[in-house]
Amino acid sequence: MKRMLASSSPAMVLLFMVFAVLVMLPEASAKRWLVGDNMGWNSNVNYSTWVKGKHFYNGDWLFFVYDRNQIDVLEVNKNDYEKCNSDHPLHNWTTGAGRDDVPLNVTRNYYFISGKGGFCFKGMKPPVETRAPASELPPTIANATSPAQPPAETGAPTFSPERGGAPTLSSRTQVLLMAVVFAIGATWDTFIHFC
Ligand SMILES: *[C@@H]1O[C@H](CO)[C@@H](O)[C@H](O)[C@H]1NC(C)=O
Ligand SMILES: *[C@@H]1O[C@H](CO)[C@@H](O)[C@H](O)[C@H]1NC(C)=O
Ligand SMILES: *[C@@H]1O[C@H](CO)[C@@H](O)[C@H](O)[C@H]1NC(C)=O
Ligand SMILES: *[C@@H]1O[C@H](CO)[C@@H](O)[C@H](O)[C@H]1NC(C)=O
Image (cartoon, rainbow, N blue to C red; front, top):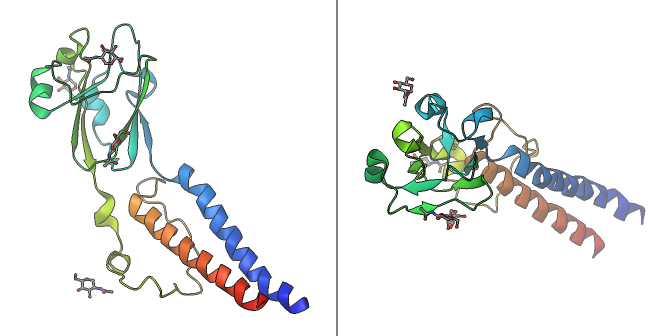
């Protein structure tokens, strides 16, 4: 019994760590941008200025808050974006509540406009270039081909926040990978000692 307790506690610690990491993930992961900050999505904001200096990454979200009676949220192609043409939106993100979440889940340029009120012509058209976090992958992780090899003992899953506290997809994947390895290790450890 003593032996069992002694051997299972490190496993419990590891399991707890994995659990902690999984709980932390949603909070520490993607960034949700409030479009226009506290001004929201309306014609009084210069969105070219708003996007300036912001880096949008695959996995981030845009949150549009606006007057649902006057404004909508349409995603259009580049051509329609330039012409403020809302006749053939790629995606109508307007749900009717005046609060719409849009996932930036593809690495490409996104073009949003307000189709209503002619506000697009006044600049309600933020150009959102969504970047891949792939270039930030550490090379050792990028082509690690043997997931069976456990990380070093000191390699406990820790967050190394990049770009102002929001870890990228790559570091999340890395943490998840380590968590899985730890979980398998911990389970195996417990299993061995119970048999
Ligand atoms: C977008 O969807 C909303 C809600 O379904 C609808 O009221 C609106 O007419 C649609 N807009 C366009 C341009 O399709
Ligand atoms: C991105 O999100 C949209 C809306 O939730 C979904 O329809 C689409 O399949 C997603 N695309 C990818 C590549 O995950
Ligand atoms: C937005 O601001 C930029 C300068 O940051 C300016 O060049 C542009 O004309 C403004 N757009 C509108 C619609 O006022
Ligand atoms: C990763 O790939 C690069 C080129 O694709 C190679 O030069 C390097 O040796 C690889 N590293 C590992 C750890 O496999």
